[in-house]
Image (cartoon, rainbow, N blue to C red; front, side, top):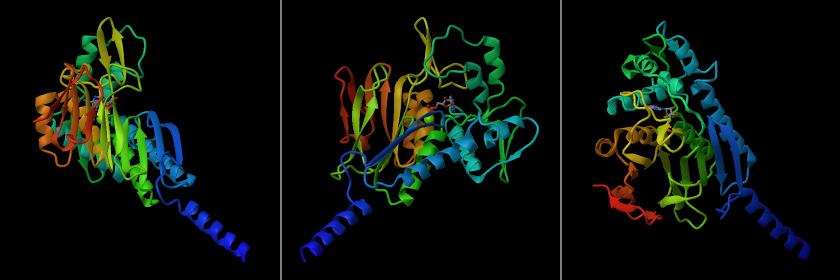
Length: 344
Ligand code: AMP
Ligand code: MG
């Protein structure tokens, strides 16, 4: 009799463990990998099944294989190789992401431009590095003539770059897309509590173990990795930040970073130290954070007001943190040197 009782208790415990119900305080599984040119970490708080993370990383590899400009067989490499010659048939996914990127280009008057490739290659800004040269004025002018989203043609599943030497670069939007795709994989596997981090493109799925919002730290661009300007509380939202501090080199006092202003051909002289977008779609948030970093405060505000369900945290170069209304009660400033204002 006692034996039977013990067996029932054991079965109950086992079924709870196997079903993995309930959210844990710490991740029940977490993995980091280098992909899409960045460090990616997936942490799951409610389901212990390694296959889920494997499926998620497999999905990001598929996205990278289509969208990377350095993988020779990718859709993007194919398009770039045939620039000025012919249109290239691409996967539906690549087609749709380029379409989205062109819509954002249109909306931002070309501040965001997925044909930025020639300028990105010319500047060749990788990780924070020691460097003492910049491209010449002539080189920059020449590359600028090859950057224009209006010369990207989409029709019937084909993409054509109208001028020889043009190059697509989806670095400003693809990580967000990857984060959305990872989220879909986790959702399909009934994961309800997870943090997806694709090189700072965060998707905070569901809520924490106690059903409270996740606390996402917004990095202090002037300081080390673990220092935050503030903490934002979110549930089931993406949090994406762009800033010139992410990849740059310095010559004297001048900083040259990886977000290029198509109009000048130089790294954007931004009014911001960083731009954070909080929303439902990570691809859109990714494109918007890069765009607004270039556009500045006034145009950035205009752009945001034309888009539904998106909130922002802007840190300006004069150390003001602007937080949009929707986040007013969910953001806590963590740096007394900064001034907090509500975005009007
Ligand atoms: P992010 O880190 O998301 O702000 O994106 C920066 C990346 O986007 C760069 O490393 C480039 O690959 C790409 N990029 C740079 N400038 C632009 C631009 N003006 N429009 C679109 N993409 C850009
Ligand atoms: Mg971006």
